[in-house]
Length: 184
Image 1 (spheres, rainbow, N blue to C red):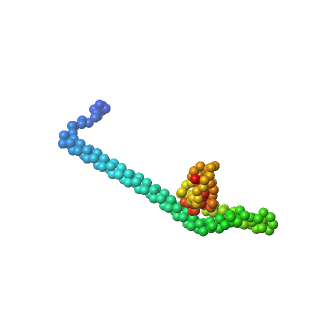
Image 2 (image 1 turned 30 degrees about the vertical axis):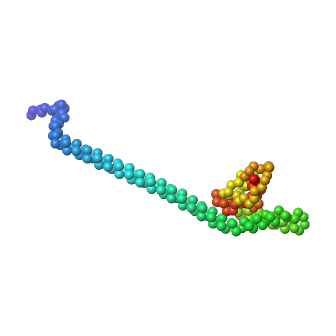
Image 3 (image 1 turned 60 degrees about the vertical axis):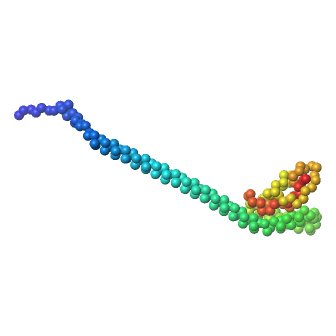
Protein backbone atom coordinates (compact mmCIF):
# COMPACT_ATOMS: atom_id res chain seq x y z
CA UNK A 1 0.00 0.00 0.00
CA UNK A 2 1.20 3.24 -0.93
CA UNK A 3 0.50 6.13 1.17
CA UNK A 4 -1.73 8.62 -0.37
CA UNK A 5 -0.68 12.07 -0.69
CA UNK A 6 -2.89 14.52 1.02
CA UNK A 7 -3.95 17.53 -0.87
CA UNK A 8 -2.69 20.69 0.58
CA UNK A 9 -5.03 23.39 1.62
CA UNK A 10 -3.80 25.51 -1.20
CA UNK A 11 -5.11 22.92 -3.59
CA UNK A 12 -8.58 23.49 -2.25
CA UNK A 13 -8.43 27.10 -3.27
CA UNK A 14 -11.32 29.27 -4.17
CA UNK A 15 -13.36 28.26 -7.13
CA UNK A 16 -12.80 30.19 -10.24
CA UNK A 17 -15.46 32.82 -10.95
CA UNK A 18 -16.55 33.19 -14.43
CA UNK A 19 -17.52 36.53 -15.79
CA UNK A 20 -21.26 37.30 -15.84
CA UNK A 21 -22.55 37.56 -19.35
CA UNK A 22 -23.61 41.08 -20.37
CA UNK A 23 -27.26 40.13 -20.97
CA UNK A 24 -27.56 38.82 -17.39
CA UNK A 25 -25.91 41.94 -16.04
CA UNK A 26 -28.34 44.14 -17.98
CA UNK A 27 -31.31 42.10 -16.76
CA UNK A 28 -30.11 42.35 -13.15
CA UNK A 29 -29.65 46.08 -13.57
CA UNK A 30 -33.18 46.42 -14.99
CA UNK A 31 -34.58 44.33 -12.15
CA UNK A 32 -32.70 46.46 -9.60
CA UNK A 33 -34.12 49.64 -11.15
CA UNK A 34 -37.62 48.13 -11.12
CA UNK A 35 -37.23 47.24 -7.43
CA UNK A 36 -36.00 50.75 -6.64
CA UNK A 37 -39.00 52.24 -8.48
CA UNK A 38 -41.35 49.87 -6.62
CA UNK A 39 -39.73 50.86 -3.31
CA UNK A 40 -40.14 54.56 -4.13
CA UNK A 41 -43.82 53.98 -5.05
CA UNK A 42 -44.36 52.13 -1.75
CA UNK A 43 -42.70 54.96 0.19
CA UNK A 44 -44.90 57.56 -1.54
CA UNK A 45 -48.00 55.49 -0.76
CA UNK A 46 -46.87 55.16 2.89
CA UNK A 47 -46.33 58.94 3.07
CA UNK A 48 -49.80 59.54 1.61
CA UNK A 49 -51.34 57.13 4.13
CA UNK A 50 -49.47 58.80 7.00
CA UNK A 51 -50.58 62.24 5.83
CA UNK A 52 -54.19 61.05 5.55
CA UNK A 53 -54.05 59.51 9.00
CA UNK A 54 -52.60 62.69 10.51
CA UNK A 55 -55.31 64.79 8.84
CA UNK A 56 -58.00 62.44 10.13
CA UNK A 57 -56.61 62.65 13.65
CA UNK A 58 -56.51 66.47 13.46
CA UNK A 59 -60.09 66.59 12.13
CA UNK A 60 -61.26 64.24 14.88
CA UNK A 61 -59.52 66.34 17.53
CA UNK A 62 -61.16 69.50 16.14
CA UNK A 63 -64.53 67.72 16.05
CA UNK A 64 -64.16 66.60 19.67
CA UNK A 65 -63.28 70.15 20.81
CA UNK A 66 -66.23 71.57 18.85
CA UNK A 67 -68.63 69.04 20.41
CA UNK A 68 -67.30 69.81 23.91
CA UNK A 69 -67.66 73.56 23.28
CA UNK A 70 -71.20 73.09 21.95
CA UNK A 71 -72.15 70.97 24.96
CA UNK A 72 -70.75 73.59 27.32
CA UNK A 73 -72.64 76.35 25.53
CA UNK A 74 -75.85 74.32 25.56
CA UNK A 75 -75.51 73.67 29.28
CA UNK A 76 -74.82 77.36 29.91
CA UNK A 77 -77.84 78.36 27.82
CA UNK A 78 -80.10 75.94 29.69
CA UNK A 79 -78.82 77.17 33.05
CA UNK A 80 -79.21 80.80 31.96
CA UNK A 81 -82.82 80.20 30.93
CA UNK A 82 -83.63 78.50 34.22
CA UNK A 83 -81.87 81.11 36.37
CA UNK A 84 -83.22 84.14 34.49
CA UNK A 85 -86.68 83.53 35.98
CA UNK A 86 -85.34 83.80 39.52
CA UNK A 87 -83.26 86.95 39.06
CA UNK A 88 -86.30 89.16 39.67
CA UNK A 89 -86.90 87.32 42.95
CA UNK A 90 -83.29 87.98 43.97
CA UNK A 91 -83.72 91.67 43.07
CA UNK A 92 -86.87 91.90 45.18
CA UNK A 93 -85.13 90.27 48.14
CA UNK A 94 -82.20 92.66 47.79
CA UNK A 95 -84.51 95.70 47.72
CA UNK A 96 -86.37 94.39 50.77
CA UNK A 97 -83.09 93.99 52.66
CA UNK A 98 -81.98 97.54 51.83
CA UNK A 99 -84.99 98.87 53.78
CA UNK A 100 -85.00 96.30 56.56
CA UNK A 101 -86.13 97.17 60.06
CA UNK A 102 -83.29 97.30 62.57
CA UNK A 103 -85.24 96.48 65.76
CA UNK A 104 -88.08 94.36 67.01
CA UNK A 105 -89.93 91.51 65.37
CA UNK A 106 -89.23 92.88 61.88
CA UNK A 107 -85.48 92.62 62.42
CA UNK A 108 -85.77 88.86 63.00
CA UNK A 109 -87.90 88.47 59.88
CA UNK A 110 -85.28 90.43 57.95
CA UNK A 111 -82.58 88.03 59.15
CA UNK A 112 -84.65 85.14 57.79
CA UNK A 113 -85.15 86.97 54.50
CA UNK A 114 -81.39 87.62 54.31
CA UNK A 115 -80.70 83.91 54.87
CA UNK A 116 -83.03 83.00 52.00
CA UNK A 117 -81.35 85.64 49.81
CA UNK A 118 -77.86 84.28 50.58
CA UNK A 119 -79.01 80.71 49.80
CA UNK A 120 -80.42 81.88 46.49
CA UNK A 121 -77.12 83.61 45.61
CA UNK A 122 -75.19 80.47 46.62
CA UNK A 123 -77.41 78.38 44.33
CA UNK A 124 -76.73 80.85 41.50
CA UNK A 125 -73.00 80.61 42.15
CA UNK A 126 -73.13 76.80 42.21
CA UNK A 127 -74.71 76.93 38.74
CA UNK A 128 -71.84 79.11 37.48
CA UNK A 129 -73.71 82.41 37.61
CA UNK A 130 -71.53 85.36 38.58
CA UNK A 131 -72.35 89.00 39.12
CA UNK A 132 -70.90 91.42 36.58
CA UNK A 133 -68.82 94.13 38.25
CA UNK A 134 -69.64 97.59 36.90
CA UNK A 135 -69.15 100.37 39.47
CA UNK A 136 -66.29 102.63 38.36
CA UNK A 137 -65.69 100.61 35.18
CA UNK A 138 -65.85 102.06 31.66
CA UNK A 139 -69.19 101.50 29.94
CA UNK A 140 -69.23 98.31 27.82
CA UNK A 141 -72.39 97.80 25.73
CA UNK A 142 -71.74 94.04 25.67
CA UNK A 143 -72.49 93.67 29.37
CA UNK A 144 -73.91 97.04 30.49
CA UNK A 145 -77.25 98.66 29.72
CA UNK A 146 -77.12 102.41 30.14
CA UNK A 147 -80.37 103.83 31.46
CA UNK A 148 -79.18 107.42 31.95
CA UNK A 149 -76.27 109.76 31.33
CA UNK A 150 -75.46 112.28 34.01
CA UNK A 151 -72.94 115.03 34.50
CA UNK A 152 -70.41 114.04 37.13
CA UNK A 153 -67.26 116.06 37.82
CA UNK A 154 -65.61 113.21 39.77
CA UNK A 155 -66.04 110.62 36.97
CA UNK A 156 -64.55 110.46 33.48
CA UNK A 157 -66.83 110.49 30.48
CA UNK A 158 -68.16 107.01 29.78
CA UNK A 159 -67.42 105.77 33.32
CA UNK A 160 -70.18 104.03 35.25
CA UNK A 161 -71.47 106.19 38.11
CA UNK A 162 -73.82 103.71 39.71
CA UNK A 163 -75.58 100.37 39.31
CA UNK A 164 -79.38 100.43 39.15
CA UNK A 165 -79.87 96.68 38.69
CA UNK A 166 -77.26 93.93 39.01
CA UNK A 167 -76.26 91.98 35.93
CA UNK A 168 -75.11 88.37 35.69
CA UNK A 169 -73.17 86.10 33.36
CA UNK A 170 -72.41 82.42 33.01
CA UNK A 171 -68.95 82.01 31.54
CA UNK A 172 -68.79 84.54 28.71
CA UNK A 173 -72.57 84.52 28.18
CA UNK A 174 -74.41 87.53 29.60
CA UNK A 175 -77.63 86.35 31.23
CA UNK A 176 -78.78 89.85 32.09
CA UNK A 177 -76.82 93.07 31.49
CA UNK A 178 -76.08 95.43 34.36
CA UNK A 179 -78.36 98.48 34.27
CA UNK A 180 -76.18 101.48 34.97
CA UNK A 181 -75.94 105.24 35.14
CA UNK A 182 -73.10 106.58 32.99
CA UNK A 183 -71.07 109.78 33.32
CA UNK A 184 -71.26 112.25 30.45
